[in-house]
Amino acid sequence: MDQKVFAQKLPKPTIILYTNDPEDVIMAEDNISFVCKTDVKAERFNLYNNSSLILQQTEPTFNLSKVMSKQTGVYKCDYCYQSTCSETSDPEYIYVKETFPEPEITAKPRKIVHSGDNITITCRAPYPNLHFFLYKGEQEVMNDIAVGNEVSYTIESASNKDIGQYVCIYKTKKDSTYQMESARSNPIMIRVKDLQRPSITIGVDPRDSENVIIDCKSPTIQNWKWFQLLNDSKDVENEIQSDKNTVQFTVNRTEYSKKRFYCIYRIRIGDDFADSKLSYSIIVDQVIDYTTNNIIRLLLSAVILLVLGVIVWKHFRFLQERTQYLPTLPPALVAEDKSKGNPENPGVAYIRDPQEDAIVFDTL
Image 1: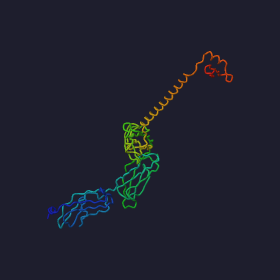
Image 2: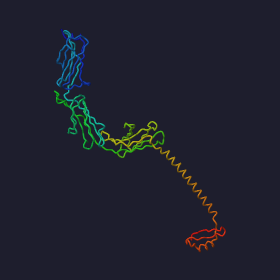
Image 3: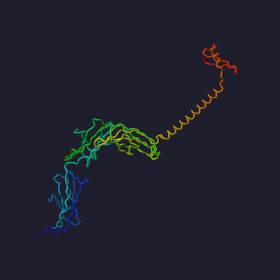
């Protein structure tokens, strides 16, 4: 009897692939499984690779251990009951890799740091328990076996000698039965760049006394800088991009009472950013209200001027009144008496006023 006629009586099965990778990436020496799924009774199941029968068994699950690249291909399955077999399932394609995918490489806190900062470079793979290698150019600077799926290398107190391009790779451990190596990671460029700290000042917003204005000024002349206002935790509160050397941040005095702020600026170097050193801190409650102070100064100045004016006026009145009551002597008498002189003090003449019977001294 024609098998194709019988095959029409059995529904087509579904083939399902199971791997240890969430994205079904299959590496050499991985273990994988195929399940030939059907809702009807079956006596035997068949698994095909590139149309060739490779396995026949009574269970629907086919386990393939330590697969290799030669097992890459198209897999199908069917099932049989007595003398009738179903048509084959839709195909499931697998590709067995004999080279690991490239690792991920990152640097913290950033790839461009200040002199003396620490940098931690981390290499990460999608698989655990591998041997990692880190290179600066072609020079190996680290090799380590990961307990999990990553290792880290710390550059302490970075300086110009640490500037360069870093890449990492990973391999199976030496005691593995099958040796594999990953492709190289994308390179990262580590730089050391010291940007001077910006200055930071604070004052009351002249348009709204409920706000304060925080000025952040960079000492550099590069255009297109990114200024950032940072809070106590060094988190970014606000950011302004500008081609000027000074920007102004507006902060509510009530909302941020007793809060401390810093600022930095950053410039672009290649595809990365270099951050300046942190400014000194300011506290919102320490703001000086220059408008109020200026008014107080003006009032004090006015009071002082008024007091001085009164003193001058009183002194002038006193002199005017004293001059009014001074006696007037005949010129001849003054000249005569001056000529006699004062025997005790030759520079002073004494004059007797005949009306007052008093001596008036005068300088010769």
